[in-house]
Length: 374
Image (tube, rainbow, N blue to C red; front, side, top):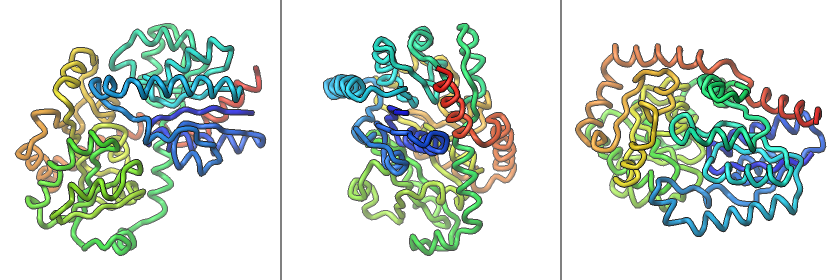
């Protein structure tokens, strides 16, 4: 069968690739045409557009890049019609994918959605658009099934695919000596810096994160470089700083870190599943954040806190993301044993809420079953 898969971010590339691996296992004739990245390409996908050219964050940034976005939509629609897939599979990326879902449905193409848009946080009216255009929704957060039931829409909870990816990584390297040797790191405890994947995020978060280096000289700071950015881009921020940069090694870095400073997003959940005490950081343009606060219907910005429905990790947002509060929080993460211990206990509860491993295989098998049943 022919699968047209659309992912617009690094996390979507990861989950899309794992899904493709299991679709390949169950369908020997599988063909993939994708909007994604290097991981999806490695699983045999023909990449139409790379996600590094698709990611625009914030209301202001979207408006500024509207011509590019509309051009991508037009191109995607024409490409789908020309290729005539058996199914179009959306992976998160709602601003783009919900428009394509509407188009695909109107053209009598089957539509699956893997990893629900966060419509429970804002724009809940989109659920009606999803009910109309999406044949099957596969969700990865436990509370999403109950949310959709309120709108009389049955979705399938398949568990979180990160559990599989992290289980594989944690079993592969029990100590940090090899990682340290490869990257020229000292034997000091490591602090991971995950400033995001987009240039706007990195520029807004990384400079303040780097100010912690002088405050914690007994620790080694390491930046997890986003695959969509270049070494030269990070070099501008790193000049004169005692910090290392690693690419494609985020999971290995987390596995051996004592604490982490993380920009809000999927990385907050990844960090928690590696059992690394963390502080969640976010600073956006004042206009974008003001608009978001008028619309967002949830108490927290991090997936960890949303799933736990409590403040498991501290969120430093806008004015709270400053040198004094960041220093205070990092000190607690490193040196307050009771605080660290409670966070780690909550991480175990978080893992239980997410269900067991096997999400990608479960999703692929259910997709194949649905397609074969017609």
